[in-house]
Length: 119
Image (tube, rainbow, N blue to C red; front, side):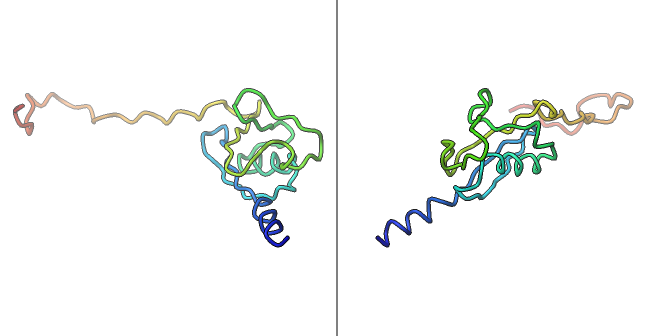
């Protein structure tokens, strides 16, 4: 029927979010026929990592490991899912930003000028 065909087409496109090791989130629009390996390659490119050392996980702990050539529609990945890109070649957490000094060091000002008394 016409209704089924339209529903099938709508279900084939998926929007997936991939959390990169840097902490950034990559948004990818893929077809359900996209293979798991293709998704790993796209995510690895977004993280500037070699795809051969990357994997995807739904929970950061257990990597997904479907058979080669398995389409995403058969992996258990659904549109809107958040996947985690894991790789031994990447730091597990983003590098901390260098701390900036709070105020320049100088001679004492002799008090708290400019501050209003507590009410």
